[in-house]
Length: 527
Image (cartoon, rainbow, N blue to C red):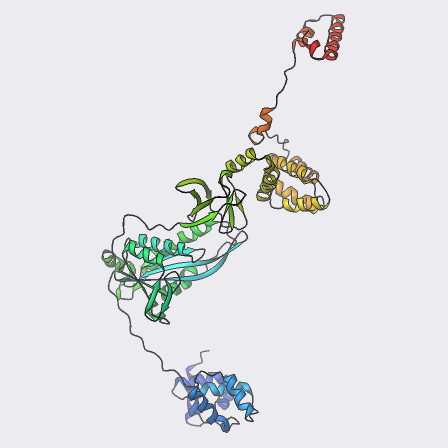
């Protein structure tokens, strides 16, 4: 709390000239006693030197001072217990405040301002910003920040976690943005950089060493508890929070990776415009943009190829033709069951390899508990094993219309045939689509009808309200067995005889022949 200069002068006058104690000054001037104490401390009057009356703590001061001299960090609560054991009967809060006054103060450490040359050093760190929901999966939105130590140009990119693959992608993105690499990259002691450290003995992350070898820079961790050594990136993260992130509206929950890409595009524009207009701390006459123009030629050139940053994980296919990556299942051809395969993932794609052969490719899903399927894989499994049809039907319903699982559960509790219900719902799904079916199932369940008849009634009512015809699906590709049905052609010669008849008697004679043909079966049909 800031007080007027006039009141601050009154506090100092009463303390020096009139020797009033803190409480009296606070009461007479109408301010809090901590405000009076702060003003006196700022003007060189420590708490221990102020004139105070006798206190019940005074007999215990030798105990407190001697104990704090031997154990400077001993908690005040422990000191209070020791005093109580020796007969102290005062208030704990007042005792604790007095201990805080008497506790030895550490000598403030002075720091030298670190200077670097253009192109010599850049600093790297992560910053956590928010929790993000994609479907039912939760992610930690984390910012990768790299800053050039001399020109102070900032690179900012957001990721859904701080895994090693994203750590590598952040480096590659920054090197591309700077069109070069500094000779030294300074890191905090994070696990992506340093696996273990015992004094000066450092065990780097092997992947970081491979990245450094590819781009020819030296990874250098700061000393333990010496965050000031990478103060440039620390201030850059604070600048991101205060300037870029503050007041930014995020539409949550996110629907997918596209939302992250939009955020990163905004971050790129901010880095290329707003941050470049700041004055350069190394030379206040220059902007960051001007300083970067001078520093960029001093950067080491990039290699011809980027370091590979795709995630790679070996997986085992179980008896069902799916592989688990992160929290989702991705389909593979049924011929790959019980095999070990390699999953290679980018931020947008999941590829599944068998040796050097690509056997499946899917769009990466950031939800959880989902089955991502290639229709060709499922169709192949159906052709190979018809018993998989009902299971596939339920899976198709659960992914297209999640609320249909509630209907199936209630139908099973009432003893209805699930196989018939699934096939009926799938036919209606082909006719009306997932969106319309979802609304119809919700209305049917709300009316207490867990059966396709209720769903059909809602669909027909909604169709009639919009004055639409009944949809008739024609798709034999989904029912290949229909192609194999043999239809016997009817003999149409009898209709030619009917057209030639001119009298009622002739018509009756033909009808008699027709009856004979019907009763005679195949033999009569040939006559």
